[in-house]
Image (cartoon, rainbow, N blue to C red; front, side, top):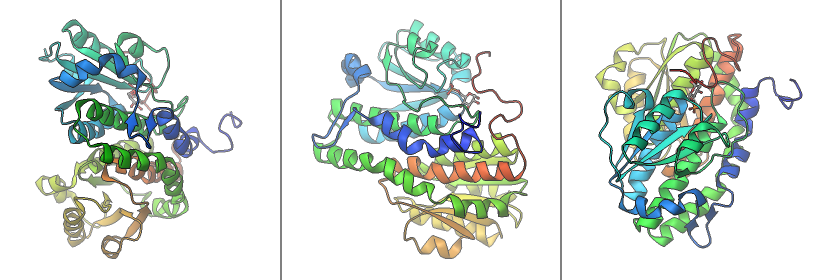
Length: 369
Ligand code: G6P
């Protein structure tokens, strides 16, 4: 087993470190920055359907559902197509309104999750076009769907999903740009600049992983916390949800992810000197607004850990700890900002003596309802 872990203490850490590679593998052969072109072989047959679709419904569970939320932002932004993201378990029992003009995308690492399978089975009966984003080749969901695109994350052993999530986000990014390309909702020059930047993301993830030593320090400060709040806006919001899920899954610390602006409608009541608040505060369109959210936390003596853009000064002055990540287009923020959150959870869980790779009560793939 030590060999399989490639010298890392746990599969989870190994898989976190594999992300430059798994993200690269998930876009390899699919993007042509010089021509400003995205190619997804498994969608070609459905180009016409995608061009004329009324909307996209994404169904998934757990971490895959969080990837779906990132997909919603990206598809709506670039392809100007309405997207709904549904928990597969709710969707399947809701008598949902679906027809032949709907595209249903199922996201699943394992390709075997029972609720997700049942959701697409239902959508299939109602005539929708089904697309899959799965990691396990030949698994049930890819066999049930009409088309789709695999993530190429390689086998994921740790129960808490890490590299599969960023691979899903990578493929959703490609899908958003692909649909935008066939619908003509994105200019060629924008596509060229986005794809050129996307190609550099694996090396920026590599850079981001260098925050590990600093994160060990921060984790040791946070390890005895009983609760933790994660905040983000825009694509930072699903990242916050995913950060909270990782922490609760493997360290058993109660954690909640919230859109930063919603804090005033509830979670702010929880903030005191005992409450760490981890904030995605990178330089993008919501930067100023997030700064005021941080001020609100500080005014109530909350402990702020901020994920900031390299060279940031304003947030750094306010936060108790700040972790710098490289600058990237807002669309690619989740691929970078997720990394430090994975590392924070990992180190806290190790410090608390938890079974990181096999947390209690959880299964890698849930094939029963
Ligand atoms: C389980 C796993 C999670 C995963 C979820 C959905 O709960 O522990 O890590 O996100 O299932 O799994 P899927 O294979 O469909 O992505």
